[in-house]
Structures are given as C-alpha cells and as structure tokens.
Amino acid sequence: VLRQPRALSCHGCNSGHLGMKSVLKRIDGSFRLAYKIRVGDQLSTWQLVDVMSCLSIRGAQEEDPPDPQLMRLDNMLLAEGVSGPEKGGGSAAAAAAAAASGGSSDNSIEHSDYRAKLTQIRQIYHTELEKYEQACNEFTTHVMNLLREQSRTRPISPKEIERMVGIIHRKFSSIQMQLKQSTCEAVMILRSRFLDARRKRRNFSKQATEILNEYFYSHLSNPYPSEEAKEELAKKCSITVSQVSNWFGNKRIRYKKNIGKFQEEANLYAAKTAVTAAHAVAAAVQNNQTNSPTTPNSGSSGSFNLPNSGDMFMNMQSLNGDSYQGSQVGANVQSQVDTLRHVINQTGGYSDGLGGNSLYSPHNLNANGGWQDATTPSSVTSPTEGPGSVHSDTSN
DNA sequence: CCATATGATTATCA
DNA sequence: TGATAATCATATGG
Image (cartoon, rainbow, N blue to C red; front, side, top):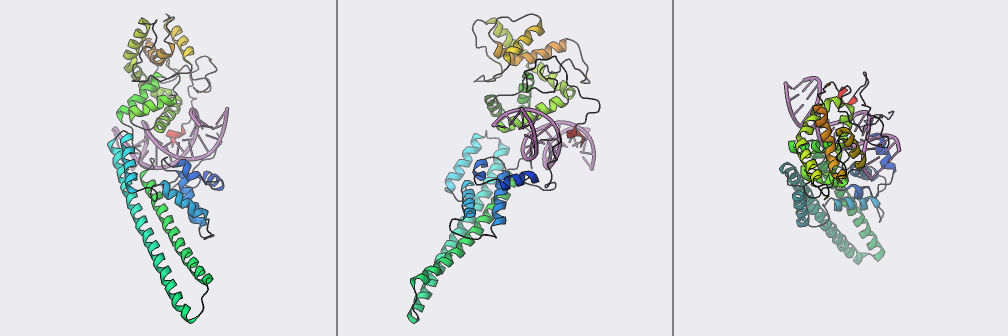
C-alpha cells in the first residue's frame, strides 16, 4: 500500500522505463549473466543496463588482455545474432520463428522489418570489422618494414619489435571495441523501436478476446488457467503465453475491482456458453457410468484442470436443488458450473444493475476480495466497493 | 481532443 | 515464482 510510485526517473522517457530503484538494484547486482538470462524476452531492461554499464565504465579502464567489457559485448553481439552464426542460419531461424508464431501477418511484417534492419547492422559491423583487421595488418607490416629498414642503420632488438606490435594491436582492438559498442547501441535502439510492445500496443483480435473471455467467465470461480491451459489459449488466440497471463492478471484485477461493470459481459458470455455447457452436462449425465465426457471447447487435450473441483461440484448440487449425483464427471463438468450459475441466476429474475450486491457476485471471492486463498469457504460476501473508494486506474 | 479501454510493466508479497 | 495492485502508454470511440 505504501509502496513508492515507480516513475522516479523515467517519466518522460520513451524506452527502458526503469525505475531508479530497479536500476540501482540491477546495477549493483551482478549482471554478468544478465544478458543471457533475458535474451529472447521482449525488450529486456537487463540489456539496456548492461550496455549502459559498458559505455559508462569503458573510459576508466581501457585495456588489459582479459577485458570483461569486451567479453560482454562479444556475448551480446553473439546472442543478438550480429557476430555469431551465418546470415543464412539467422534468417532461417527468423523465418521459422515467424512461422511458429502463428503467422499473424501484422506481427511477422514487423518482425521481418526488424530482421532486415538487424541484417543491415550486421553487414555494416562485419565490413567495418574486416576493414579494421585489414588496416591493422597493413599497418603492422608497414611498421615492420620500417623497422627492418632502420635495422640497417641501428640495432633493433626483437623486444622492441614485439613492443611495437603490441602497441599497434592494442590500439586497433580499442577501435574494434568502439565498433562493437556502437553496434550494440544500434541493436539496442532497434530493439526498443521494434520490440517494446508497450510502444505500439495492439489490441487483441475480437476472436482472441472472445476466447479469453469465454474461459474467464466459465471459470469464474477459479480463473487461474494452468500452464497447459495457458498454452492452449495462447495457441488458440495466436498470442504468447505471457500475453495470456497478462490478460488474466488484468482481467482478474479489473473484474474484482468493479464487478458491476462486468455484469453485462458476464451474462453475455454465460448465455453464450450456456447451450454448449448444458449439452455437455447432459451428455455427461447420460453416460455417467463411462467417464471422459467431452468438454466443449477444449479441442484435443482437455487440459483445464481445476484445483477445487470437488468443492465446486458440491456447490452446483446445492444450487440446483437436485443433484447430478454420482456422476463421476465432477472435474470435467466443473468448467461449466459457473456458466450454469449465470443462467440460473438470470432466470431467477433479479437484476440490480448497479453492481451493488448483485446476485451474481463470484462466490469464491472471499472477504479480502480475492480468489487466491480459497481455504476459507466463507459465506458469499460480495466485495462491493465502499462509497468513496477510488480507482486509481480510471481516476487519473 | 477527451475519456475510457486495454495490453504491458513494475514493485511487492507470500 | 506466480499473484496482486498500481501505473504507464497506447488504442479507440465519441
């Protein structure tokens, strides 16, 4: 409750969005592995910090053979596909990734754009690198020739030659490092342009929200999809699993905050799935001896597992008055229980509308207003808002 | 242009 | 680690 506002340092900033605290936390911690850890995520704040640390520190300590800074730059370029494998492999991987992502045109277009720019950077990097190497060699041989010529007029020790070569190489490797740094910067900027999803948010497709809402409202008693369920939903909606997680996180919190606002939506989706649910239940009851009734919306692997199915099953029994007793389908039917509740409540002919204590408040929301600790099967306390409650999200 | 909706990010917590 | 709550930044509808 008392936590500080996080926008301490980046109110106007356009990328990164690092709160001061987290920056400090990450900077003073070890980020040797930071880059590796988060590669593949979207814009990784780790990377930015990492690069920044490279840039800021580099002035102080320039060389020394083992140079950790250089190592890190190398690692990053490698991981980013700039310096590592061949161009063919990279683009093939990109194509594969694009194909695997479901082929949503919008996404892949941006991706290919990003890839193209990255390729450009890579080409520049390689040509520059080659140029430097060539120049280094040329310069070295040039100096060697000079020394050789001088050796006619004065004695020159092999030590001296070695020293000269060392100096030259150090000089050029420092130039090389600068190249690597600017390449890193370019890649980072590119990433923040293209991959910071926050920058260009796209709403999910109608279908996707439909599917997500269906799941949410038909699992209202416990809207926490398992990892598998998330994957399934992600596949169906052609979004990522983390997007599904985000969606459910947002949905839960926003639903809980203002149940009244979602009443209509809830009823809508209840009605929508009611038919299939009823069918499924009917089918389940019919062949209640043989288990494995088919859930309506779970395609191949019916994998929506529900922790408190037993509880819910009881709940349904008491609600309906009659009992679908005995049928072993508890777990499978569970997913429709909430849906049925909607219908039942609807036919109950009650409409408050103001969300005050709507008949249809989620039973599993405990007094704290949470689904999470379902250990208290307490009475149905609808977590209605106090009159003066402020919703910070909508009030700014 | 404004208010609201919404996806993503961050800080915290158990 | 996954959840919540607050917040941010962009989308969208009027």
